Length: 401
Image (tube, rainbow, N blue to C red; front, top):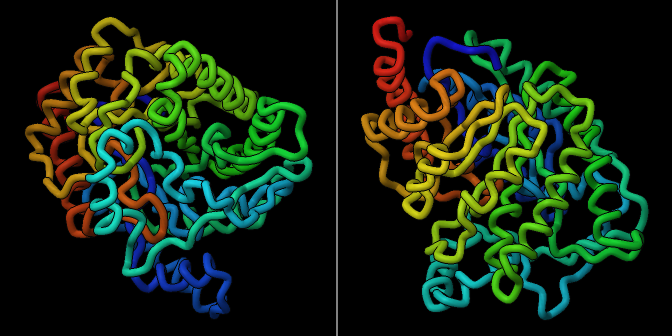
């Protein structure tokens, strides 16, 4: 991440899949037969198109949209790890909504019942199948070499057709891998977590070795506070989070920090979020990570005020801040002048060359779930790019590109 002479733009990675691709991914998820050759052709075309579209609206650091993952932003990796087994969920399991089944849901139960019926885990007209209980039954080993190689190949082919952009690929953090899993193999939860971390390190290295930046997604680090507290305390939560930070540092040991960025958010759902942990309560833990970039949710109305954290917290040397300056979970398209305002106030605190303008989270939480219409997604990304240009003019003057 070299110092530019303007504010660069990126996003969190997952983009809304085209309907024709979703039809194939749905068959893969449900274990139904499909035309593999036709899928491969469509996937290549879809990745080519989404990379080109990102460049056209002004995004500098682009992703493959996570188009090759049929199982969502975190669950995909369970199909790339030996040692896991999916079993029927027990009657009390909270299924695919487990990560958000905390105090927020208890306090606003009536809202969530209505919300999920209308908008919950539904996308493209069909619901996710209910997830089972993921259980560790043997040694965790990475087995996704062919899958990640295919994802990389599709993405690099698309990048070669577009000038002037850089590429990043999102992957899951160790702490966000099936956080409600059972373990029948390792003696302690921490031992299992570090085994997952060691295995995932192979995927991270493969992306970096291909000349790309790896983004490590860790939505559960912050959002699990809502599940734990109460009855647990902030101190107990921080102890839990510290172990997950240590596990990720274990996974990326020896990898170049400037090729790694870390994304943490408060969960992508557009609910009240009244029991979120404050950024000030976790930022010291996040900054312990040996990464070159920190992607942080900073545009939604529950957390936008937390830009002031950087008035007293110093961004460590060598790290970039990727603040969310547009939200993924509202249909209101932010005005470029508001985007520029969000960028400049942060740039004046942490340094203009240390800010890469981004989004709060992914616009799609998986192949079948989205928070906005595709047309709004692209309008938001264009507003992000337009706002970055306005901010660059203010921060660099006439020199800004």
